[in-house]
Length: 149
Picture (tube, rainbow, N blue to C red):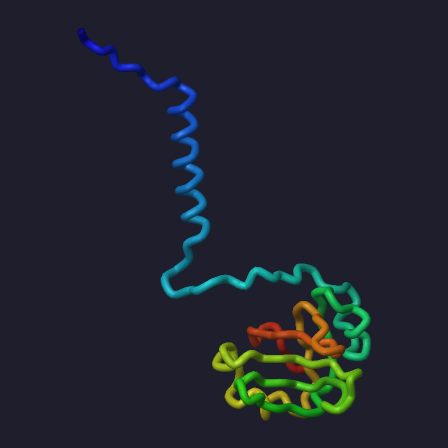
């Protein structure tokens, strides 16, 4: 008694081939140059057409990705190594705007970023979030924090 081998239906072969191609394409799209690390997934795209908003408007724009401009009135380095820039008003004023440079990102910035940005007019680009009632932006790239002219 001989058994006849059944062939797989053509549609299963096509589906398997399609899945293999999709998987290969997904892996190629995800791979970058070695050591490049994860890419920044927040792209502000075209920002507000009239330029950056004032630091004093930031609290009313929480949740938006914008550029915010203002003078750095004081800086500090937190115990965890994060650099904090108070923009527009000093640290005691809850109406200030805060830019945080996480410790892990400080090496990308100018040496001693707290000293570098103190007293400067800055433009920070990113998502405005509320941290304890204060409009805040976390900036991980010097391209997202420029000094004014």
